[in-house]
Length: 254
Image (cartoon, rainbow, N blue to C red; front, side, top):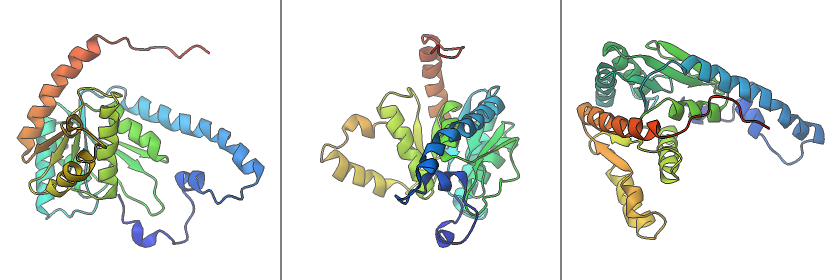
């Protein structure tokens, strides 16, 4: 995610997401009525993403900080992760920006894999990194989020900030509710996640807000090879499960 916090009140042209969510309680009726007209724009964004990624094979989505510089140890770790996934035959999908997103895309290319970035229009531009084979630019966060899940076999969560944690808990919610199945969510990095996991155990689990099975949805890994092994094993389960499911190939009838 771009360094937007320091600029959040600056003057700029509103993005579509900002405009959509800008509710101050006093809009005229015609403004609210116009919301339905947004559906065409939203549908076209989904269609563009689906069309661009329809031929992508097995893929893994990697999340991580946009603010991590190339000389940071995490950059090299995530670059190695991208290499391992690419060499194993997986496309790598990221948010398309700098930092650890760049590291994953860079490593994927170096490993012979397809490198994909799903960038987002922000109040202050987040430029795509230079290691993308397919680069998409979304104007709505929710459309972009669908692409991250729809074409992935797994999520790998690398050290990051609010955006990275948002994706972590969104994935866990989708798995917990059985919306997606056999979909590993892997936390990468030694010493990075202990505090978060301790809070989940000592507060959310202890108070009954989640159960032990929910904690079991999280996999820890310290090395890229561990990640690739988990993804490979999950891929086999996904293929077996998917072969038994009926798939829709035509629009729903009204």
